[in-house]
Length: 418
Image 1 (cartoon, one colour):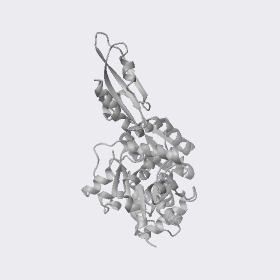
Image 2 (cartoon, helix red, strand yellow; image 1 turned 180 degrees about the vertical axis):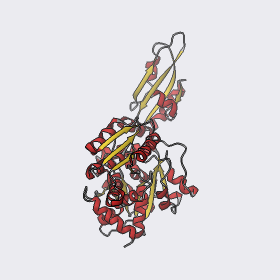
Image 3 (cartoon, helix red, strand yellow; image 1 turned 180 degrees about the horizontal axis):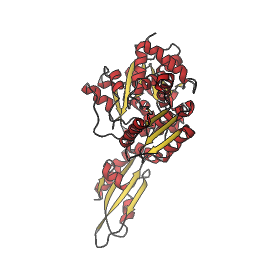
Image 4 (spheres, one colour; image 1 turned 30 degrees about the horizontal axis):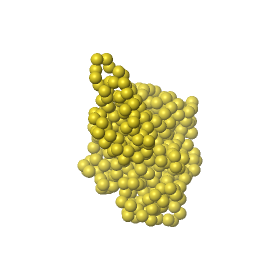
């Protein structure tokens, strides 16, 4: 047994004190859909609904075991899952912890962090963006002599996340792990599990998934060095990282860039809605990445194979559900927004309504009559049951001389108006 394998086994034994192995569930719906054996490693079912507690717990365990460190105060910067894992761990070990969050952090996440940490946690809101909170946390660590607990870029964090690989092998009970799909943000999970499985399951094929708006690992692997993205789409907040961790990239640098697949954010929303409606499984955007990417794999390459998808988190704020549903409908081609130019005369609106098909439903309508004008503009949102219905509707618009502009994918305009 290798050194890393030994240390991961010890880490898992420590973690089992606070929660048992998360389930590895065979999913019949996905298995039938993709003609393979799909298993979900349900990290959304840890006490804090994400795998982040593993790394945080292992970091604390090692720091507290080292008597020379005098580890009494801890600090982290996070607006999400890492903060909750950190807080839970502080409460378990009864150690003071301070969490720095941006002032823009949703109240739900602040409340959950305080709930997990209880009397041992202080939450400090600093700055409008994460980087400002992160800098404040480092200043606090220097001034107070507190231990900085990073979200992913540390060997002890990586080792803690690697316990997922150990559990998967144990739960498969000797069956082959043909394909493992993992989400990748900062890279702690991917770095730890691949390192563990290189020793214990050398024939496993790995796929890594990033959101299309934050391809940090993919670009870094393509360049052969860590690349910091100029901007990221924060919709997949659990995996939207501009720069992959240093230790993490070192562990992953030998993988080819084409092993990293990108999930479009709108398609990801459709996957989240599907899992909620069909399976009753609540996943945050990052937690759905591995399931979403199954449709991007070559069907022949996974047919009949044992495929494990790590569902990394279920901290979904249901206030985001309308946005997720909206994006899912847009991805499926079932909802569009238009600006129409319509004559300002009695009966013009009624004439327009007769152009709609029986499955076309008006979801948004705004019109303000302008005086001394022959034509006015209308903002309209239309939902339908079949994407082809929009083709029919466009033909009717043209036949009836209705001028229109499709603004569905005009992000700046759509975000302003809708």
